[in-house]
Length: 122
Image 1 (cartoon, rainbow, N blue to C red):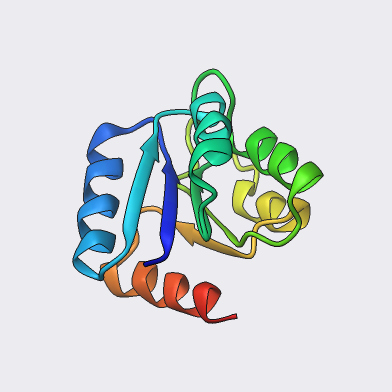
Image 2 (image 1 turned 45 degrees about the horizontal axis):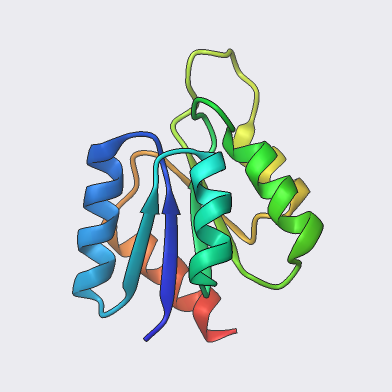
């Protein structure tokens, strides 16, 4: 069973994504920020990582860069609703530094599950 690591500071988002992916048959591990996500990464060795971009402590772009410094193979989905920091395109930046797919929040369940299936099929 593929393991997926979800990194998001919003508990409701984590819970929703976890429920969707567990219904699809995936094992899911959750973390509430990039620091926790990086620690979980070492423990659970996920087949896929889904991370938010705007989070406290260690935000998603720094998390992706740190993952890619040690692991170029595990697929990453970056997601973001934008935040209050102006018109920077965080998702484009995430792709530039190593995210395989991006999802703007809010996203449809089908978009999430299709992206997960695509990346796990490679």
